[in-house]
Length: 262
Image (tube, rainbow, N blue to C red; front, side, top):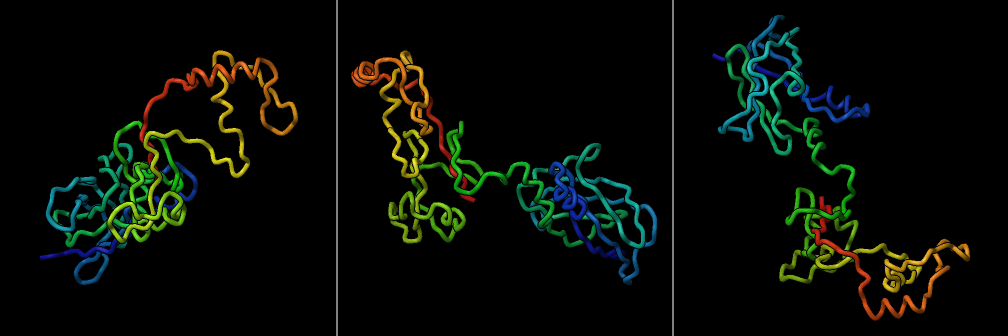
């Protein structure tokens, strides 16, 4: 016969720590209130409690994160901190979990879904400070969570609305495949070098191609416009030599460019 029922709230203390500017905690604070089936709060005292996290609402193998814990209860209210120093480790908080409670050997059902604040833990691996649309070089050979490889792939603005709001159809209108739902493209950066957008300044894009690193002249800002000017060395000679050899590129390595999409 069931003896207990549970009212649960999760993570309030953890939210306070994060807002205060501290490091993102590696803990989950769970608070709740236990009642007898008659509706009365559970009597004050210490109770043995087992808390298990599952990846599904029913079935499956769980991870015990409090097994068992001696938990003080006052007027039915209890507080448990999961994870952290001296406690069983938490699983990676990068997916949905359901929490199962057992009190004094009685399993409380149904499992309850972890939502909202506990997933601030995923900020340890989520690029919260990387804006959507940012491009980065990646040493691996495939995409990563929250990112896609810059291969010109056609995407749907309905599926990636935030990315679409940033890059729109700058890199294509999605017509590169036969799917009518795709209406914009990722950049295609395979086999190309990146440079800064000149913003209409029309800087000399070939300047460095005309200067061999082995004979780099000293430079200075002669006319005060903020751009370096050649002050020594034979410009004409370097130009001719560079154009003849075309050996101006330093050794390079191929990387995968990723773009944050969500």
